[in-house]
Length: 90
Image (cartoon, rainbow, N blue to C red; front, side):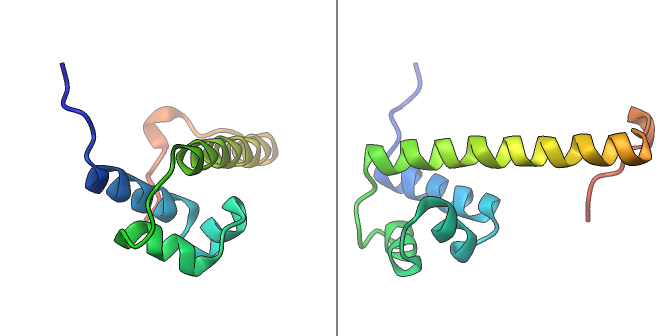
Protein backbone atom coordinates (compact mmCIF):
# COMPACT_ATOMS: atom_id res chain seq x y z
CA UNK A 1 0.00 0.00 0.00
CA UNK A 2 1.34 3.44 -0.86
CA UNK A 3 1.43 6.31 1.58
CA UNK A 4 -1.14 9.07 1.05
CA UNK A 5 0.01 12.23 -0.66
CA UNK A 6 1.01 15.07 1.62
CA UNK A 7 -0.07 18.63 0.89
CA UNK A 8 3.52 19.34 -0.18
CA UNK A 9 3.35 16.40 -2.61
CA UNK A 10 0.16 17.85 -4.10
CA UNK A 11 1.70 21.34 -4.37
CA UNK A 12 4.78 19.87 -6.03
CA UNK A 13 2.62 17.93 -8.47
CA UNK A 14 0.49 21.01 -9.22
CA UNK A 15 3.70 22.97 -9.85
CA UNK A 16 4.80 20.24 -12.26
CA UNK A 17 1.46 20.50 -14.08
CA UNK A 18 1.95 24.26 -14.35
CA UNK A 19 5.29 23.60 -16.05
CA UNK A 20 3.66 21.07 -18.41
CA UNK A 21 1.24 23.81 -19.47
CA UNK A 22 4.24 26.03 -20.22
CA UNK A 23 4.40 28.12 -17.06
CA UNK A 24 2.20 30.32 -14.94
CA UNK A 25 0.73 32.48 -17.72
CA UNK A 26 -0.45 29.61 -19.95
CA UNK A 27 -1.73 27.77 -16.86
CA UNK A 28 -3.67 30.84 -15.84
CA UNK A 29 -5.31 30.98 -19.26
CA UNK A 30 -6.11 27.28 -19.41
CA UNK A 31 -7.50 27.13 -15.87
CA UNK A 32 -9.16 30.55 -15.86
CA UNK A 33 -7.32 31.52 -12.69
CA UNK A 34 -5.33 34.67 -11.93
CA UNK A 35 -1.54 34.21 -12.30
CA UNK A 36 -1.00 35.41 -8.75
CA UNK A 37 -3.38 32.72 -7.48
CA UNK A 38 -1.45 30.04 -9.38
CA UNK A 39 1.74 31.15 -7.62
CA UNK A 40 -0.04 31.23 -4.28
CA UNK A 41 -1.33 27.66 -4.76
CA UNK A 42 2.19 26.49 -5.55
CA UNK A 43 3.84 28.19 -2.57
CA UNK A 44 1.15 27.12 -0.13
CA UNK A 45 -0.44 30.50 0.52
CA UNK A 46 -3.73 29.15 -0.85
CA UNK A 47 -4.94 25.60 -0.25
CA UNK A 48 -5.29 23.29 -3.23
CA UNK A 49 -8.83 22.03 -3.59
CA UNK A 50 -10.02 18.80 -5.11
CA UNK A 51 -11.98 20.86 -7.65
CA UNK A 52 -8.82 22.70 -8.76
CA UNK A 53 -6.97 19.42 -9.19
CA UNK A 54 -9.87 17.96 -11.19
CA UNK A 55 -9.93 21.11 -13.35
CA UNK A 56 -6.18 20.78 -13.85
CA UNK A 57 -6.58 17.15 -14.94
CA UNK A 58 -9.33 18.15 -17.39
CA UNK A 59 -7.16 20.94 -18.83
CA UNK A 60 -4.28 18.50 -19.22
CA UNK A 61 -6.57 16.15 -21.17
CA UNK A 62 -7.43 19.04 -23.51
CA UNK A 63 -3.71 19.79 -23.94
CA UNK A 64 -3.06 16.12 -24.74
CA UNK A 65 -5.80 16.17 -27.39
CA UNK A 66 -4.40 19.37 -28.91
CA UNK A 67 -0.88 17.91 -28.99
CA UNK A 68 -2.13 14.68 -30.57
CA UNK A 69 -4.01 16.63 -33.25
CA UNK A 70 -0.90 18.69 -34.00
CA UNK A 71 1.22 15.55 -34.23
CA UNK A 72 -1.32 13.93 -36.56
CA UNK A 73 -1.26 17.00 -38.81
CA UNK A 74 2.54 16.98 -38.97
CA UNK A 75 2.64 13.24 -39.68
CA UNK A 76 0.00 13.61 -42.41
CA UNK A 77 1.85 16.52 -43.98
CA UNK A 78 5.42 15.29 -43.77
CA UNK A 79 5.08 11.58 -43.06
CA UNK A 80 5.86 9.83 -39.83
CA UNK A 81 9.45 9.03 -38.98
CA UNK A 82 10.25 5.41 -38.23
CA UNK A 83 10.39 4.82 -34.47
CA UNK A 84 14.15 4.24 -34.56
CA UNK A 85 14.72 7.66 -36.18
CA UNK A 86 12.65 9.72 -33.78
CA UNK A 87 14.69 12.05 -31.64
CA UNK A 88 13.45 13.72 -28.47
CA UNK A 89 13.10 17.49 -28.50
CA UNK A 90 15.89 19.55 -27.06
